[in-house]
Structures are given as structure tokens and as C-alpha cells.
Length: 163
Image (cartoon, rainbow, N blue to C red; front, side, top):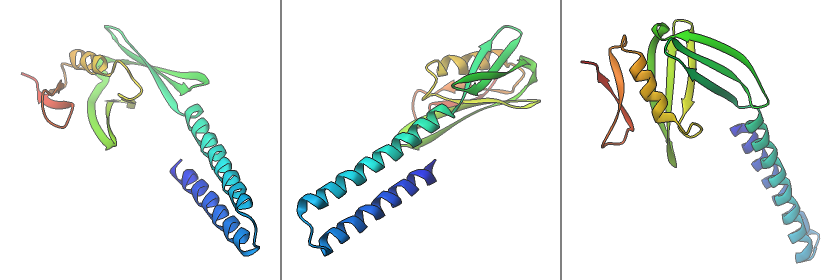
């Protein structure tokens, strides 16, 4: 996605620069140059809109259902749901928490099972992120640790040993 945005910026920027230089060289009026700038900005807006729509439609989304016996994960694109996998709580080998900072903090929670990564979700797209972490902490006593919400510090959750 980043390369397409960069491509759009370079294409529009180059077109804008060439259009302004040609307009100035041919002795065109200021009105012509303003028209060139407006057209280039409209092209940039259209390309950015296309990139945003494409990434939204093609994003993989998860639906996670928890029961006393285990949990199931349904994954797919926004337009269609197709793959549902069920797991027992005992099949979880590891849970992970991480964060990235890009103007805001985005937290990620990942569950690794015997069959691979069951899911990785972020708190930006999941309203019940804290509840999900709590449920997986409660249902995985076989792991030697849990994720505890931090009162202070930079990280939202910290890994603590179980007693």
C-alpha cells in the first residue's frame, strides 16, 4: 500500500511540476497554471481514494467466539466470511502482546496454537480488546504467564508470571 501511495505522489507531483514549467515557458496565464494545479490535485485525490477503498475491502478481518471448551476464529474479507477454525483452550502454546507507535499507540494481541497463529488483532479495530485479553488470560492457566494491565509506564499490558 505504501508503494502505491508513493507512486501516486510521484506521478501527480511530476505531472504538476511539468505542467507548471510548460505553462510558464509557453507564456500561459496564471489561470491556466491554476487549472493545471487543480487537475493534478483531483487526480491525486482520486488515486488516494482508490487506494483507501481497495485496502478497506481487501483487509482480513476476524470474528472470535469464546466458549468454556475453546474458541473459534472465522476469518475472511469484509465482503465474505469463509474460514472457521475451532480450537481447544489447551491447544494454545503462547499468547503475545505488542505495540507500535505511529502518531498513536496501537496494541496487538496474538494467539499461537499447535496449528500455527490462530489470530492477531489490534485495539484500533476491536472495541473489546481488553475483554479479549482478560478472557484468554483466564482460560489459559496452563501458560506460565498472563498479561496484566499496567497502571503506569509506556506499555498498556505487561507479562507477569502466574503464582
